[in-house]
Image (cartoon, rainbow, N blue to C red; front, side, top):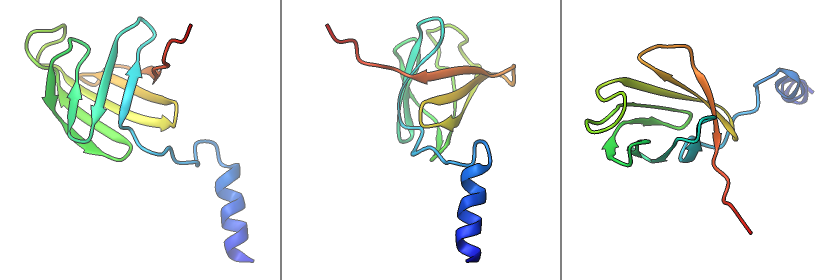
Length: 103
């Protein structure tokens, strides 16, 4: 009975459902994208670099050769479809999973 109550509480608390994982392609509201594959990321500039991966969080330093070079980037997964993206501790911006375009 206690287990059932805990599961019910977890389902009722906003944000309690955990997203699967942060790996994949993410798109910003202004059309940028990045791809996370374990400890590697393809930054919006198209340059691939290493980062610190955990299942629902990813951190990396923006590589040289692109906008915001040298900036600390943190992505925190909020749901299966949303991450919060912040640059050098700035106010996070919501990014969503990129969708394939079909005709």
